[in-house]
Image (cartoon, rainbow, N blue to C red; front, side, top):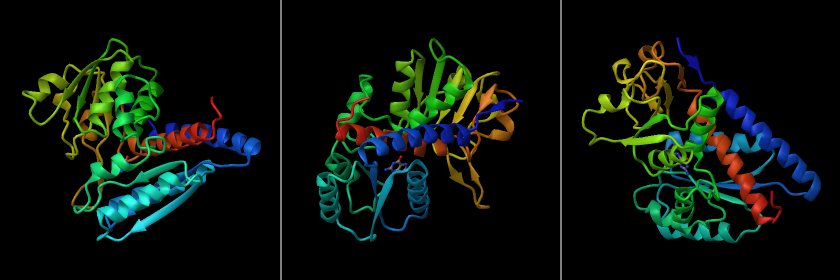
Length: 286
Ligand code: GUN
């Protein structure tokens, strides 16, 4: 039986630290961090994520401003809003919830967000900084995964770490963070040959491919740490991860549940980034 890594608890701890620091700064300077959250269209999953982000802002004592734009918003209209938010001194962080409708080029939007307010760490300047280990902002989901691994007490240095998935949001920055902590990192993807032979070598396995129950017991090493970034909705309406939890759980040493694993961490790290943005913009250095 594996130990379950409690993402809700770890996330609550991170948010509590952010809340306490926010209160201290508020008492000293009379200002609070402010996050602008932009949602375009009616994607139901995006609506849930945005609501959770706003709720987290309340929990940690931030201001949040929602900008809900209609499905047929043009790229120019969205760029105009981003520009207004870039120039607004009362806004510290800007988050445009992805995906955006198909008439909008998400790269153009990401590039337009001021790198100093890019609390998702998606702007190429911030991505470059992650590459060289000189972070302005943490990449939220990978940084949340690192917190979960740290919570197990297991050291990453020297371990074989396998990441399944090569997205810009999760897989690639995830590999960088593990590398910065001296993991021996392999990135796998849809073209990887004999994937199970690679994943069976992993001391730490991170799964972010978006396929329900994809990782089965025969694909993991006994005693491994397994982190499931997946969030899939089954036909019966239930949520499940990319890892077949029921099978894998009995074989590994640590595993994250879905829901209640990585999901809450992404939002906690977003709060941390928003606090960082606030501090930098107000020149109170740590
Ligand atoms: N859509 C899914 N995950 C994310 C995220 O972390 N940030 C943004 N902006 N959109 C997302």
